[in-house]
Image 1: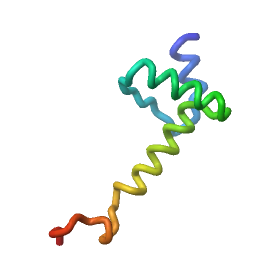
Image 2: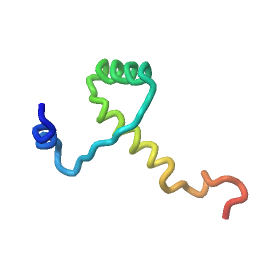
Image 3: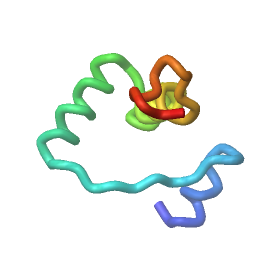
Image 4: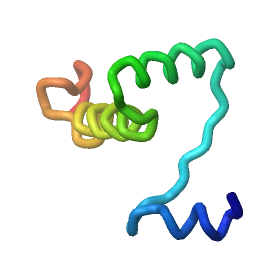
Length: 68
């Protein structure tokens, strides 16, 4: 498949995210996603959203002692 064809199939407002991880970790992740009938993109998006909820705007209760 040509890049142009692939790009045409992307939903609007989507972009590519790339990173390097251990080969075995990727395989385990792919197998687990397949077992749950989810795409790796769906799971990664869910995980990023969850991480942002916890880390983007920390509540005062989560601030370390000594912070104002």
